[in-house]
Picture 1 (cartoon, each protein chain N blue to C red):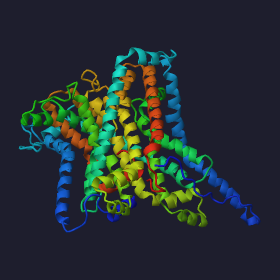
Picture 2 (picture 1 turned 60 degrees about the vertical axis):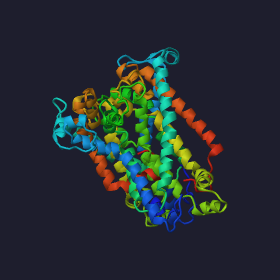
Picture 3 (picture 1 turned 180 degrees about the vertical axis):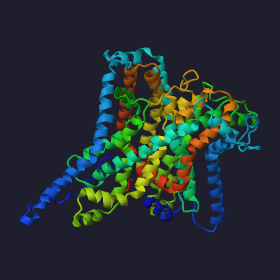
Picture 4 (picture 1 turned 90 degrees about the horizontal axis):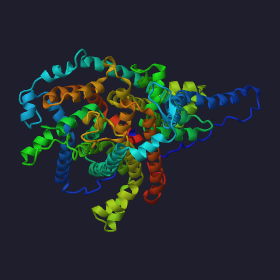
Length: 323
Length: 298
């Protein structure tokens, strides 16, 4: 994904009309240029009312005490001070979220890449397999699937019973402070299909002559993967890493449903977003929740910038073939 | 969309392994290994379907994913699990907001996409960059101020907080998807329309929009599924049983602890995912290609 629009060649509009019956041309050109803004009008309105406006308002709220009933009361940096100095649950939420991000992103992408490589060949059924692997990504964020996880990994669920019949200790993963987070991590990794189809599209772009060339040079399977696939796939890999990282910071539904909104047991699944929700919509501390929101935004923004900076060292762009 | 289609048929040879005499055996081995992975991945779905047809005693005692004595009792029990309101009510509420979300998304995003893909005006690149950034913006950052705004509008416990933003192209992902598609349509078509006297408005409506149909269908399905599955927004804005949607109705099952509720819970989960399954069966290629070309989550 290139982040800027490629400008199309400008439409010749302003050629000064020499003859009178061409007088309509400049007017039409003007209509053309304003048309762009007219078409963007709904988006502009949405951007102002539902994105930029709330963003600014939330920054203001983060310096206030606000319970929605009384008007916001300015408290300066008090919310941030409380967050960073006096709120162990905040640190706990940060820890849970970081573990989740740091585990889910590489594991999910490794799975996605492995299956994509497996599927990257001309065989019957590839299209069907590709769709089936993609299915969990379509279902994964739903409450229904979170309930499936809760019942499969909960007490007397299929996983616990399966362990039991293998002679291993039966475990209630959902109510265990050790296993509840791994169960949610597994749910995220289960949705490897979305990055997989992107990897697959990237793999199709790699010219087969390159593989032939390194094979002639004596490269084996691993050598071909290491010296052809990986460098040529690096733009796609970077794109997936960026996207999965940002998405992982925002996980909410599975943790909420599986812990019944508590982030439990003993805060072991208290995701950042879940804590933010609790602070705002159960404790009615909207100022504090806004401070948390802006801290999240700043973190994600800095992380994105760092990842772009770091990408220069390892992402390999060929001419025009990066998408 | 069709580029990955072509790539599938005429793509590079297998990364590992060669075409040769042992092709058939290798092919069989490959299919077997892929099918094993497919089974592992699809298992939770199979389990969900099996459990929804199991009588309560079987859920506890048996490890078999399919039922021995199938029953439909779970469906009736789940349907009426909440006193005073059936799941039918939740389904109606979900359907209304999902259909409206689709309409709003198609309308507003196609307009914006046309401007970005085809019209030239000062500031276009910068605005496009802004649009891309909003795709990545964490939604949780906006929820508190949006809630405050909608509360002053008196919109809490109405469909408006979910639906109105969709009519103003807040799901910028779909703008991006449509822009990508429109860029693949030859520019000569626009020029021909211009020669025939079409201005940008008529060109959009009568020339480009019909040609964008595959992207519009993909967007419609994704917009439907996302709103249908979305929990966070609905949890925040609907706190009246009368407005509850399917995801909220499902989440109420969590309060009923114990394994006896597994059956009805899974029965309603199946029903909740049924539209998603149907869309998947009917449009799987379009969905996967859409997710590929625009490179975003499903």
